[in-house]
Amino acid sequence: MRDAAYVCMAADLVRLRDIPERFFDWCLNRAEDFKETGFFYNAYNVNGTIHGTLIPPDGPRVPRHLRASCIDLVHSGTQFQPDQGGSLLIAIAHHIKHFDTDVSKFEKLIEKTADGICRSWKDNAFVLPCYDLWEERCVLPGHEGFHTYSLAMCIAGLRAAIEMLGKKRKWLKTQKEMSDAFAEVYSAGRKSIPRTYRKGAIAKNRKIKADDLKPDTSLLGLVYPSGILDPQDEKMKRTVLEIIKMNTMDSGGLLRYPADRYCGGVRKGWVTLTGAGTWPLLSFWMSIYYSLCGDNKNANKFFEQPLKRIDKYIPEQIFEDKSRSSITPLLWSHAMFVIAAKFLGHI
Image: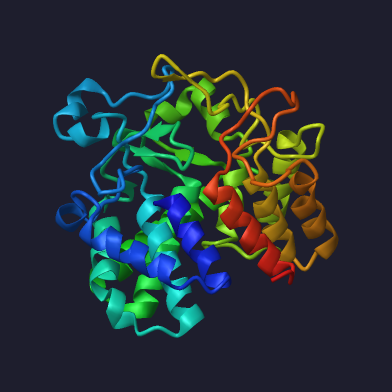
């Protein structure tokens, strides 16, 4: 759902109007369980049945006492990722503005998705175990926390729904509570923004706390596409500099976070985790950030960096060892290329 939302925005920019509209119809009428719950899970088969994903063998597990009520979250690797709904609402708003489309065409989908975000939130936390956008790290309700990118995308999605369909009490209430929670994360006392924030008892665990504070390149999403922070925000600028410092490889490409291990390989049904390459989509994302800052020099630098090592299609990752292969093409990579190219005025 997340990848597809970015793809829809890229399709808008190159006037491929039919792709987003067919996808929005698929979300409403095909995605399994959506009409009943308002939730999107992480992956689906083409016919709309829930597919799930592969979870690393050392990844988080849903505790035994939660399994009965959260069976979908542990069946075939299915995860609840709260940013999925926010991403879709942002994409719908982008499409409507880009083509000046009548909002009534997507009213049911907007309402159901926004209601789902509200349903997933209670007492300043998500009610389900929620995974981050990389599908690797889990925050349980008892942790009293959330992934920062996920929270920002939900806030932006609800704001988009309110703008498109007007003020609804539960949307306003949830958006206000989430915004207050984000303000708590932002003012948590560090010079940069944490990728995950927890205030429950588990937050005292030093190992978990150190992992939560790693500079994660997904935090660029706080500027684009969520718009939660201004690109010139001082703490955001410090966060970006830390991301570049800690995640840049010798080639100039970016990892998702320090010591990123995901390589895209699978052996005997498990992700192999032999060490990541650099991710072109992250370089394009960084280019978008610098375009919004008005810094064309850095925007062009990050935009051009992966293109020097790509022959035709844009892969998921580029490895320092050229003998290692990657998933190619990766549609999200191509979508971020198009969006970054638009910001630079190439299209």
